[in-house]
Amino acid sequence: MSHTPHQLVDDFPEHVEAIAALKTSDAHFAKLVDAYNEVNKKVYLAETNVQPIEQLAEEQLRKERSKLKDEIWSILSKAATA
Image 1: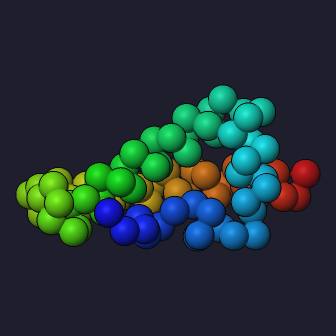
Image 2: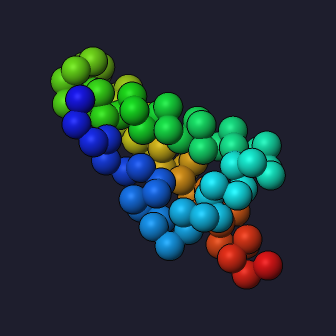
């Protein structure tokens, strides 16, 4: 399998250290990151037809991924200003 797109470290390269630090110090943030990674993997597998799913289910996964990413970004942006 090739590189999965939309990895947090690729999408937020300027926050790699903050992501690593928050994953160890904030259990809620760590759960969000784990959930994001799991959903992102499912989206990738569906998009590449490795594990195809119905279009509606794939769209729901994309929405969930977007929601999780927004939550992660909110925490990262607050941490950057703290």
